[in-house]
Image 1: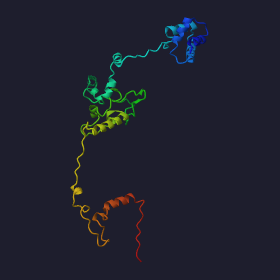
Image 2 (image 1 turned 90 degrees about the horizontal axis):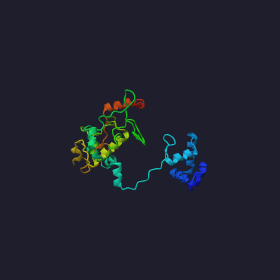
Image 3 (image 1 turned 180 degrees about the vertical axis):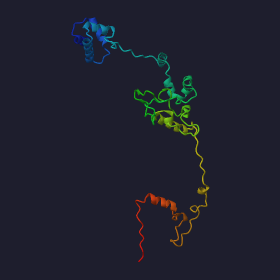
Image 4 (image 1 turned 120 degrees about the vertical axis):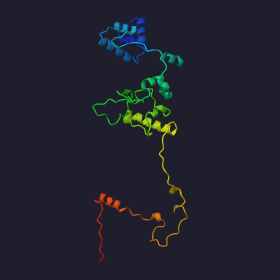
Length: 278
């Protein structure tokens, strides 16, 4: 695109050759010529600037109005990765994202939390005297962060990972081994779900210990003296005497249970009619 010709048409005034080049050079970051024309016309109409004043502001890079700056974007840096780290500083969040257990051993964590769990001093803001019965669904929705995020969402360096055993132990009861409820720790339901998955994965990998309840096995179920394990008995001589195996015989329930069921379903039971023999 011939910037010089378009700028000449834009201002509709004869400009010097050097002025045309400077104006075209100052307007090059904008996307289209139509957008440049609208912005310049708006600045001339709203702020009552003449053509020469607008060109001078664009050329010198000054603000047409408070908050309006016409400057060239910064050039892209082609330095190496080490030079970028030296300029911007070491990013601790990305470091702890790959190795989250190192944050719990750092001085920053000890100074902030000490030996207490991360959720010990958390109190959620709520309206009224009665706190909500459930925690919020999530603290971060896109770019929006709630006013009082949960203990996990408020600290970006706390990363939920099944290898981060010290963090997961804070959300497990040391006496029963049960995962603490979200209403006690204050974490949002999204992070509580992630914590539950991480704890289960850590237990399966052997990183977290858990207790299995002792169940006493009955030896009768594993003995060879049961009738179903030994040789099949001969069929009964009379089929009316009983079934082939004794445990298939009809066991009448106790009278107390029958009375209870009759009382429960008395509206739906039919009356028993006894036919007298003539």
